Image (cartoon, rainbow, N blue to C red):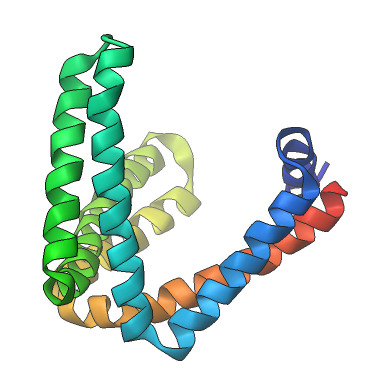
Length: 178
């Protein structure tokens, strides 16, 4: 069975096809917003993220009273979510720049780490493919860390393209699951 068919079959068992279709259409719409008006869309998505973190932080703290297991992590996560949410909501213009820049830095570090893992796999018999992917991942991670401003400015367009193509794939999966 092909990967696409396997994914469509797995999605069919987990979600109704129409829900996948709605997600795909939503992704395409959000992708077009990112491509048409990247700064304004980044602003609104960042504000939504701040509200999401704030509300999630409140729910984490309230969750301690319902389930006392891992209460330390829930308290930490809740406080962190509330603080991050307040900072983003309270400083909307700064957060529109800082949140994407932080994401670029995290992606750069992650790229280097994943690249090192792939290179180790390649030297342990994983083949040339793993080595090439590892080297490319390290190069991209270094590029992101060396040019965070340029990468941050490109991020909305990259997100827009990924959302449009991902939305198209979800729509195809939805009709295959139907």
